[in-house]
Image 1: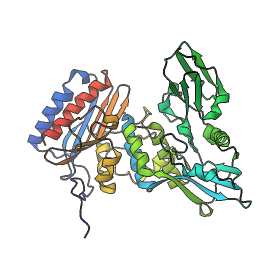
Image 2: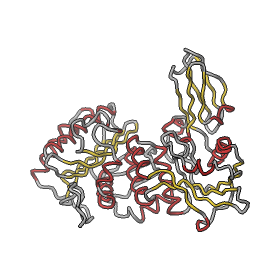
Image 3: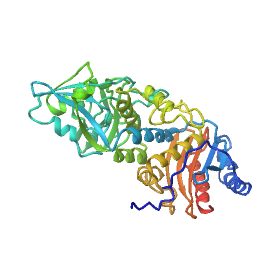
Image 4: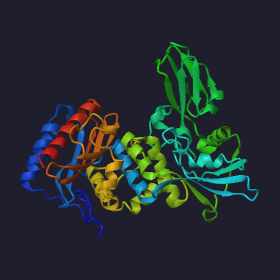
Length: 441
């Protein structure tokens, strides 16, 4: 007989309509704690605040302050992307589908949006190893890309910043250009960008590098910026066209884009990384690029094309049709200020993720106390909080799971909008409230 896990979350709970039924004493205790840590705190005075704490064992809210109101959730949006990836990407990331042409020297690839290809975080590169075979002399790539490089509601003037890498059907090097200056030596990754770079940093001088929106020319200037050894900027990927050029330079083989999709029944898959290893980095680092590509990969797997709007619409009408409040889900990462979700929506989703995938798996993927984006926070509460944070200017969010000192599993979401204090101040106050929940329940 299979031994059941002793995890407090590893219990089958039926998902029923949410009911707000809170005992008077419990409500008073939570109200007092929320008032002291957050609601009466001057740092929150101009802000909008939503707090939901849910007990999955009783299917009741223990506390629900403006839980049905809408907020800009920032990177808490990645929880929805994470759900979709866990549901539809299987246990391994599909690097590409391929077929070998009749001449046995040409390989045709169907791009899948895998962000790990030639990414410095992933040393194992099965697709690269395959394409480097001497027998392969020519490569054709089809990219079923029906999205835009930048998402709806993204701040356009952040385009060169490394946290806003473009979305692309065939990512390479994380879609980032890295300029590494050591002594008198300048190394550019990918090397193909060397010919598109003007200028060189000078030893001991401050330097900076820039590019124009939509352009490929990088300009290095001295006597500005910093003396840092490395600078990173985004690449204009041109919906797969520039990636083909990168690949040709990397492999020293002919690479072309092809117009027609490859019939799936004629192709073979190549897998790259374990799905959960990519999800763990995405959630621990709050990696926007990985999150965006994950959503595109889900679209490719489920719809046959990479279309963020279509896959979001499909998910909201199927797997996520039971959300308490209708959401506005605009991207995979949470960079968009058009995103609107409620605390109750995140509680509902987290409950669903726990039921469908198991808490043990989620404990690995989500940051815990004092790790990932929770570094420096919740020290001493290791093993008692697993959560996703979110930060945009004037907006802070955190949603996840708590294990109380009485070993009681709870699900929570705290969303703060339009605050005027520092994000660290807001996070510390939320920490005070949540650690109080852990200690007193």
